Length: 132
Image (cartoon, rainbow, N blue to C red; front, top):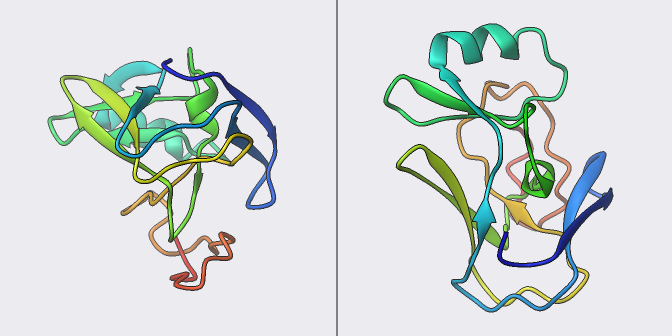
């Protein structure tokens, strides 16, 4: 982790990931912790979970951030995010899209999810798509 982060109650959904310091634009924040598993196993696990923390790499593997995770597991979705995820080399990296103020919640546009448009989005952004 390149910055001090903490998990606390989020106005978006449940718990969120918040920064304790200023993060400049286009800076690497850190790598999402988790267990590397097969996509087949990931999809089996997703069916048993209420809160999904799974990232597929597109090569038959996935990262289950519900196991051996870190604070970045609590980055909530936003249609107007302040971070983005980069999946490469078996890692899920988070980078800032813009300057992020001390105390601000980290958010990311999840893109396509296992929810298949059935979960309501609560991000509150002016450009909110309404569903995940």
